[in-house]
Image 1: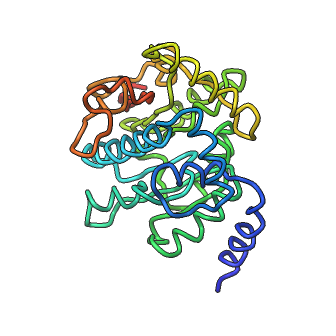
Image 2: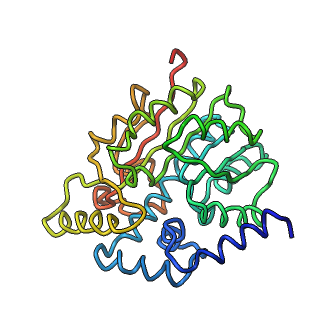
Length: 284
């Protein structure tokens, strides 16, 4: 057993006294890397919002469709920030399904030590170490994160990259300056790169009960290490800057290139998830 694997196992074993945001999400999307303490927390959230599992799966399914889109547009490099655990529909599995040639490289990035520990173990069993790697870095520190990505040797940052920030930005409050953070990443990306973003929204709740449920979820997460902020489509649009959105634009996630697996396809706004993909123009 390698030293990295032993260290990861120790980190996981030492984390079982508290819920992990990454494992909670994994539970909601149907993964198998979670424990009783994570499931207990998730079920408390589900009591307040019964469809939370479907919302999380909607985010994950959007990720899969977005990755396919990026690969079909010629992207061969992905940086997945706030990646959580690379299980159930992860970037490298989707990319390799589209490109069986096995020439797509992926760096998973998370600032939660437990997510990194689990990712190290999972990738050791399911991934190609020459093309897939997990690293620790913080979305809110673009300079250091980009340096850590470069140090992997997997990503040529002078060539187009798909930067993925999926189901993460609702954990970043405006006071943490996410707009300037995303601007920094857009500046660093090579022309032709794609930016994949999604988050939960409080846009147009269908009734007072849903409005209150959304408020309750935000209030509940305030008691955790992952407080956050829901945003409207207009508020979220600024994170793409002046980049051109790929059709159909910034929409409710189920309306973005739906397929036979898409949840909420008949009523996309019920998904509570918005997302889009934008391309960096050659002149930027």
